[in-house]
Image (cartoon, rainbow, N blue to C red; front, side, top):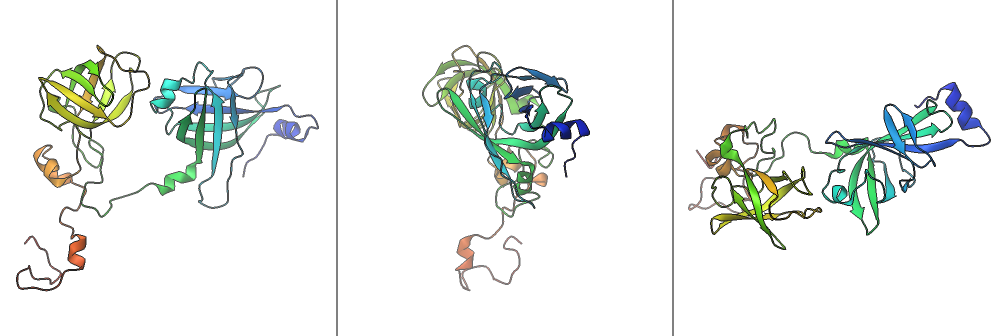
Length: 296
C-alpha cells in the first residue's frame, strides 16, 4: 500500500490540481533520463525531468495477484535524449521506468506510482510507442533447466562457465563493404566458416559505435568474411567502421565438446528420446525397450 506524505496528501485533496507526471528511465548501459508532461523542467533525486518532450502515457492496467500489468508510453522523436537510432538499436529494451506523480510547485511533494520495464518498442516516421510491463513479468521468465536437446545456457554466462577472454574466441575487424543483407569485413585473424554464427558483433566506431547485434551467419569469401545480421543497424554502418566479434554457439553437445571443451557444463539432454520412440514397437532389430539407457 502506498502512503503519501501530509504535504502530498494536501496536493491530492486540493480543488485545483498542481500535479504532473514524471518518468525516470534507466537504461541497461547506465544512462538515466527524466521526462515530464509539465510545461517546464523539474529536478529531483539528482535527475532533470525535461519538459516539452512530446511524451505521454496511456492508462496503466493492473490487478491483484501476479498478473502482468501493462501500459504504453507514446512520444515524439524530438528530445535530445530520444534518438531514433538508439530506439532501433535496442538501447531502451528492458530499461527500467519509474512513474512519479509530482507537485510541480514543490518537487519534494511526490509519490511513486509504479515501477515498470520497457518491452516492445515500435516506431513510425516521427514518433515511437513503448510497451510498459509491470515487474510481475519477471515471473514469466524460464528458471532452471528445460528438458531439451540443446543447451539452455547462454555462452559465457554463470551456468555455461566458458571463459571468452582468450583470443581464440574473439577478434576485431574493419568493415569493407555493406550490402542489403550482409557486411563484408576484414578480420585480424582467420576463423572457420560459422565460427561466429550465433555470436555477437559490436560496432567500435562510426555512427553505431557501442551497438551490439546478433550474428546470423558467418562465411569466408575471397580472404574476407561475409557476416549476416539478425537486425539492421539504424545508424548505417559504413566502410571503415571498426567491429569486434565474439564466438557463437549452436547449443549442441558436439559444439560444446569440440569447440569449447565444455561438455561437463552442457545444460541440455542430448540423449533424450524423440517423437519416433513414442510410436515405435518392440522388435528384435531394435534395442531392448526396458526403460534403460540406449547408450550403455
